[in-house]
Image 1 (cartoon, one colour):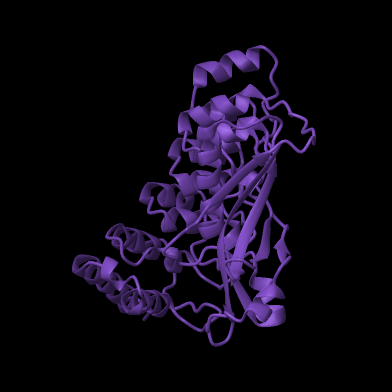
Image 2 (cartoon, rainbow, N blue to C red):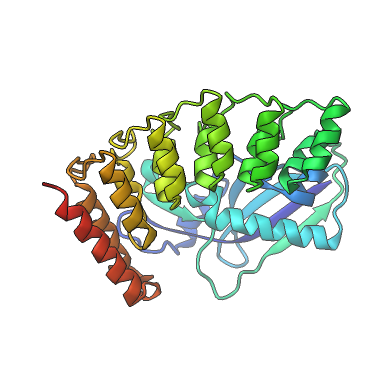
Length: 353
């Protein structure tokens, strides 16, 4: 069963941001595609259980409308019900706007100077959903029920499934084990149970996040402690070079940050992407950042360290605040938030020595 979902797309000059409307120029973009990742990789819940595959992004020229459309095509082992089709359309739209579509055509823009936007601001979204029986058979792969129990946080079911012989390290179609699924689903009790039940603690996700990194992202303090007790590296790094301490700071978990520091986390490590320290990972608009800043600097964090752009923590945070206040979304920054941010930046500056 083939399901085709499409919506309006747009193109613009990558340097001038001028929209491209010439039909001849738009026709040249017909067939441009992104398939390095697919939308079906990000389906969850009941849609994931169906076993849909595919979901790349392809651009087509709509001669009748004189514009571009983005097309995403899936294959399903069965026909989808109307409510399922609507849910799939909603998820696909989310992927065009904030998922894989966000950077799908960046490389094409670098190579050609033309940026393709699969989710432009339009008055009429004109979403089209078509389902046709194309005769293609899609094999339905069995997924361990352990993963669903981990996602829902059903510890009792996890216990029963393990007793029946389910593999504690079985992976989802996204390559995640049950303990990773529990952490990402913010089910700390289930994650802790799986850690104590013997789950593989060396697993990493596609972003190279360790289990300790995931625990610090999601605020799973008991899980983090259990992992550290079992030898987890408190200075492990993900694919951008970020450490668990950086994520604990960024997600505003002072207790987790203190736990990591108590067990040897280095507050002055810098990530490989921007050279940011844990102090630079702090969200400048949060009052919690003041507490975390005091904690980090009390435990040796150096506010005078500079990132790859040559900025100290205060300068980096000041640049972020300025961008938020000067940008299109500045109206979302309250006076109280701005005042807290300035207090935070002043605290950083006062400790630069």
